[in-house]
Image (cartoon, rainbow over all chains, first blue to last red; front, side, top):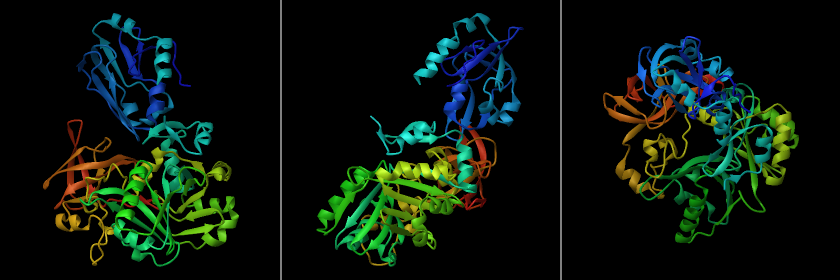
Length: 128
Length: 363
């Protein structure tokens, strides 16, 4: 059973979103996603300063088995990337919520409200 | 409705992640694919390969039948138990399947074919047997009352673990050279595999498969899924049917020239097409020099034209991404080439199509 923390918001495309005190958001892939992908071996992160619309491909995570796109859960500008995760992709397998991928400044912080809550994402994960 | 092997419940009991593999519900891993990979290179791992199809050939015409049916020459099989890897071609010289032929007696051979191709292979074999009026009986052993289970136990300690579980098999298999088989009571034990490591592929009555799997597990053999099987065979430079070759690809362009006996006067299906076309591409390896992961269907850009990756992944032994490719003639081992990965051109080095065997990197 994968871990779905209650304090986070989620996209159906398997990203988690944490709203920080300063109004920025931290984004990673869910425990369910890392488990489905298997051992991660490569992560391609976005460029800092780049702007992405919601649902645009923003990063790539690759396991031994497959490559998977990571989508921007909301529209915004990338402010920081987690190079430690790219240098050690297995850290995402070890703890998908500690090994975040990037931070964004949302175009509109209220967009986060439209994302799934933990129960909503659990239902998506359970469905496959 | 997915088909299940006789070991399906064992995989579920071990918490395997199950996937649809060509219509079969198979374990892709039981946890970490990379750990399973290392278990085979360093110790012993086992794979459920009961979805593959053993086919028994019996009758006086076995040898002349196989001689015309496949591209390799069964005349090489002179000692009972010897195995031969071959492609089975269509008239156009494309690969219908790749298979292993075990020679038992002049009236009894066993052929093991791939899971996803078994039905079409059987139809083809039976049609050819009828067309050539050969006295050969073709019996599949995957389904029904006489079904066999098949477990591949691979790794430097694989033989010892098998003997621990099947001590009665030790005498007959202790001196088994690579690519041979021995029959011990109801067990068929072959020193073949798909990992580049020593070990056995054992075929056993389906009713005994679960008990033997459990005993191997208790003896310390790591259950390994299709994920590790793929990275192991990729490192060993072994072709995967449907990826590295298929009915549209000549064995000469898929690195299988060593299995095609073209030089003598023997006629076999596909020979005239192969002779006419000759070799058009070379089958070579790639090691990615930049960061990223090579995958099937990516384009390889060389000074002699473009080529294509047929299989690619991350090599747990080399800790780099590797691939098998079909490249234009003229490309040399050691050349630096570029691979188009999502629109970015990454640097890779051309190598022999083999990366690791017997526990060691060979690049």
